[in-house]
Length: 77
Image (cartoon, rainbow, N blue to C red; front, side):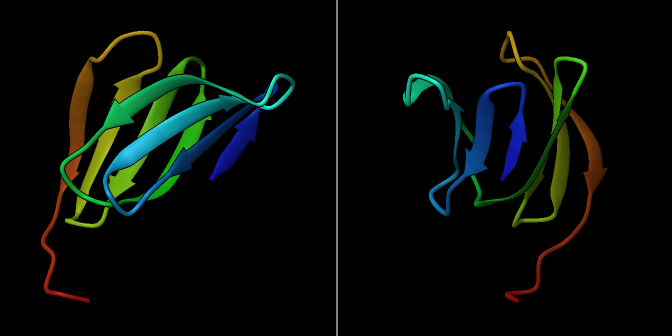
């Protein structure tokens, strides 16, 4: 979970990432991933998203462009 400039970035076990406007309590945008979202950071209109399956992705907050930064493995932890 991360809060930046009035927006809350939060991930869920089902692979959903929601960007929530905290002033209006409304969902601004929803992104979907194929694994649980376990870590989120945000800076300069880019999100870094860590997934339970071991991937770390860079995501553009205004588009669906995603770049894999790290591929790891997951052993059922």
